[in-house]
Image 1 (cartoon, rainbow over the protein chains, first blue to last red):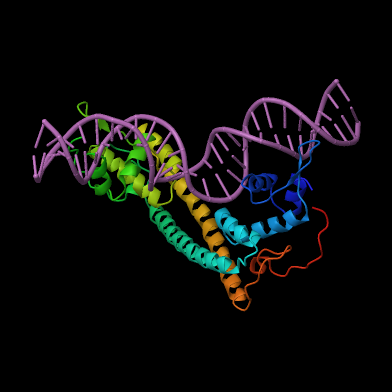
Image 2: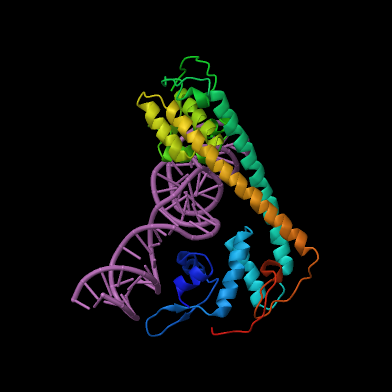
Length: 141
Length: 141
DNA sequence: ACTTGACCTGTGTCTTACACATAGGTGTAA
DNA sequence: TTACACCTATGTGTAAGACACAGGTCAAGT
């Protein structure tokens, strides 16, 4: 099947299919008559694997490493286990970062409720963000 | 003060200071004798604002917009309120995405505990990721 | 004076996973 | 023939810096 057909079948985009083709993750057969790419069943299966791994947050590079192992006939399972562990750690970090930022933003919004809008001065751009600013006068520029 | 001194004072990197200079967020004075950039007190204050807004997740573009308003003498506070609201919404999304992915990864690791490592076949790259695969034989490639 | 190390400069590239853009070609139905 | 949908290869943009390169300046030490 052709690019768009494969993309629709796999519930992804033609751009994604073309990108993975471009970087060598999947390989089509070229129709010699019109230059069009044709993807068979095996590639569909491979793409299914790629998309599943992407869903789990695996990077394209990580997926490439897995595929290299598998293409050599080796079991890629230990590598997959390693990567998924790493992904979990990274995701935990992102989760914590998002949690922290969410808190900060909520606090900021809450505090700013009772503050008026102010015009900027030479010492202040927006007091909401700058908080309490002590004007000491300019030293040297 | 010079790049590295300002960076150290503001607890950021010289690369960040140079980057913000490059994109026009902050403007140094050039020493005509050696071409070095010198940053005064006002720039330090401005950088303080920028770094605080970055801490709140404001994008550099958003910060630029705020500074443009303030530089015109207008109050940027309404814009800041708008952006922080938007940031909160985006952060909420990221938080949810991280939560979901974390769950997925934990589930995957848990499920995979009891599964052996397998060598890839023509129909399977890694069964851990692919889950239950029904071999139906190749159609056409 | 020379050397060394720390800092400086302007400019360009890299990172990630696509989405988008360009300039054309192919197929098919009206 | 036209219009539309799809195709191609190739290049660029996205975001916020970090890094790279090729050189210049400064100051202390030898």
